[in-house]
Image: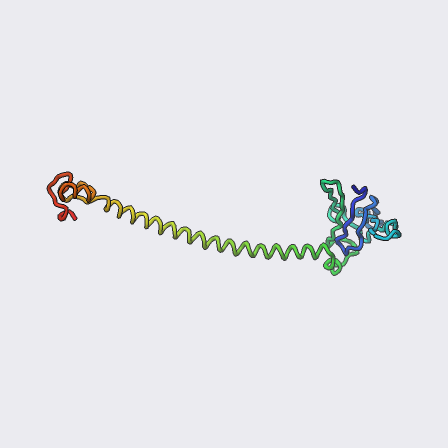
Length: 186
């Protein structure tokens, strides 16, 4: 577990290393701070190099974010915003943080377009589903009408309905009244 948080510079990536815990307060911007960073290095002379003060005066709430992982690793992000004294708009637009946000905006815009297309497809699919439901209901009504009429033969005399097999079992006459022949009922 590191004693000091790792600083990640989202301005130009030049100030990456351990935060010393010190924050310089510039006279011209007393409400802002400039963190001190011990640069990372691989050579022995770089490992023990003197801390560098970040060149821009930062708002602690807007420009500095601190995180701690479950494993206890700490890191600090230095985020650029347009209102940093001494950072021109042109420089701001060249920062890593700005480019990351622009990439995210592009991705969000692309995803919003996909959502719009999917919503259109959903509307079309819902209309098709409604049409299919209506067709099925009509078909079921027709089938119900067919099955009720095909479930039996109605006698014109007594109005009873009996299956054709019962008419045949009764020698071709109405099983209820025995007065009407099958040929006459059809």
